[in-house]
Image 1: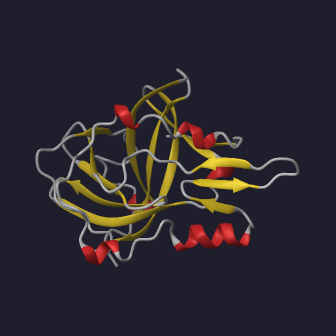
Image 2: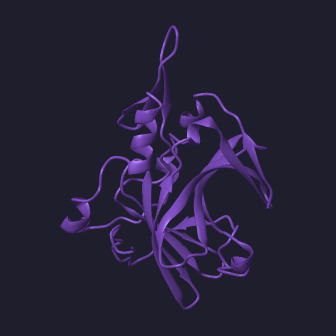
Length: 214
């Protein structure tokens, strides 16, 4: 896999919108536990502090960047519906289940063979300065990194979400990918790492609690 940084203008936020209608969702009849709801804010602490320090304004799902004449608005990427579990599965049945809990954070369950890992990942505050691209067998895709901040598997680095095929310049179903860090983790979660995973609807799915891993 090769990664390269693409500097982009403020319209990067638009890349992430308009695709929810094609996404296969895992609908839930239950809401999040009350103990979890009370701890969830609109943004991660790191994200909020970053924009305070840089004198940029957070307004809902947008970032307002002041200019000499007009302000520029950048949308915060949103690939999956908030507060719904979405399963992304590999060809061999291993999976990542994701749940967006606010504008910047996702919680996850990784099922790899007989192993199961939980965690939380967060959008990098400076995502608007550039986006990563990742090469798969069918093309190169824009991807947004959600860095793992809580987990019971120290090898986990980030979870990527994206839907834009650069070569074909068209949007496809949202996909997810998993990355691990460090040489000692090279063989960790091989069935999921650096694979493009498509959404899958499961008949049964347990609730994810963002407060579980510490």
